[in-house]
Length: 333
Ligand code: KG4
Ligand code: ZN
Image 1 (cartoon, rainbow, N blue to C red):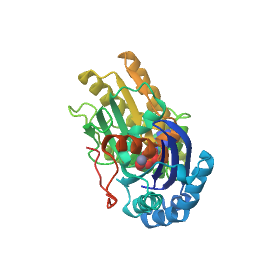
Image 2: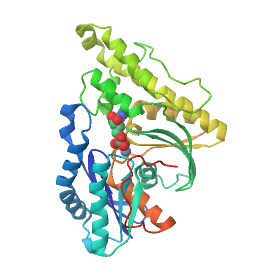
Image 3: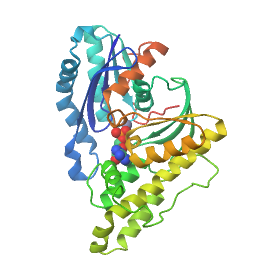
Image 4: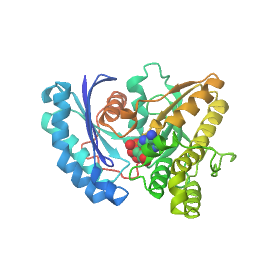
């Protein structure tokens, strides 16, 4: 069975084709450079760029997969959460294709898509596991009890961890989005240079908070001269990253121990982070746990994860109603 997955919730236009549950035939991802000069995603520009790109990305996905449009059995597209105008482009394109080809359509929750990215490559990932969904808009610690069954154990009380990365990158003059660049720079810096706050690390809940950390970095940057800042950019990146990542790891390990869950996966754009992967893997090893994480191309927003989740959604509950609309604040559970 061939599933075509479409993702357009933010600033990546992506179309992918997968065979059955996990074989990726193509996964074309087109980022939008236009936002970098504004230091963040401009919603109106995002929808316009999706409209310009979607048809060629679709044709490219078919070509790369060497698949005829009539061979697609199921169409899947993200319907939320995300920017409403951006979501509508991919969602309506997917519905239009399904209607035109007389094939089923399934609307996919973007967060379920991120979680499902792990299924594409980890055949041995047990149905029941913990996952940390970490992106530009979300920081969720989730207990998964099989596909479609989620219990949110903790979430951010303010900024998402990816948002903190992007804001700190901006403070350091690193461009947008800056998570990847902070990750790279941190590798050259001293993580003990400055002790930034580990917000809520001792708190009983499994919730997170990232706005204080961002403010602490801003105050520190403000206290430096331009020359000092240039000298310590990598050190600040490393010190910020250590604080951000330590809380994620600490709370995830605590949840794994309390709930006696051995298998932990990461998902979402921030799951590409090298220090997070290193620390999480080490701490899991110490408690006899197993670590799972998709490769960077499947962590960032992409159509393959939407196809993977769409295929499973369809098997679980059949096609979506064709009247389904975009839901900008759609929740996971
Ligand atoms: O999942 P995603 O592609 O889009 C959303 O759904 O938000 O995540 C994008 C986020 C951005 O905040 C970006 O800076 C961050 O993921 N990111 C990273 C890394 N690569 C991307 N953050 C930390 N380290 C990375 N290597
Ligand atoms: Zn995402």
